[in-house]
Length: 244
Image 1 (cartoon, rainbow, N blue to C red):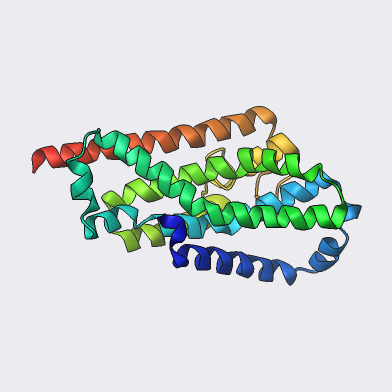
Image 2 (cartoon, rainbow, N blue to C red):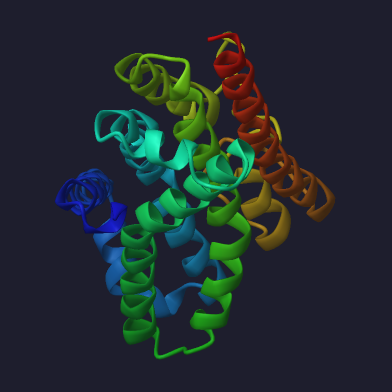
């Protein structure tokens, strides 16, 4: 299974350590971590949620991109083709299964951080806050990234998709608008800036302002597009097979 692959765990841990290493060089960051009690607990939890969602989805999407190609190499797709069930249902199952399995290291890293926050602040209210921020900020983005990364490489060379996805993530989620058009200030941002700011009042992403309605719109749009792209790719696969 996906979560048993050593590369999944190693990649996730290395990317997060890289991110924390960068943040540790920011002036005052270590002082903030050592004195979390001085900050509002909700702000601390949201900051950690955003920090986790800043770069880990890049590794998440890259790791998922070879799922269908691996099935072809191991001839699992041939076995699945002759088993009862529709192509659409199989692709949805692949998308959900691979997404959940690859997200396990992210979930564990997230709650390790929440454990540190609770230990530093002594406030167990951080746990329900963490569940709320993870559900509304992280999960919609992972579903969006998972849907595209599992299904789109069915028609695109995997390395090309991976390179394009990395570029898209920085351009479409983290880039501060400076003359170049970008999606980073729109509700179509799986990094979760609109949900973070709209629902919880703070965000590290380049979103100037957002309310709960915009946060809800972003959440619904991301999930709807995730479901739609899997459906469209499955229909394209059926059309392609019908022509063979």
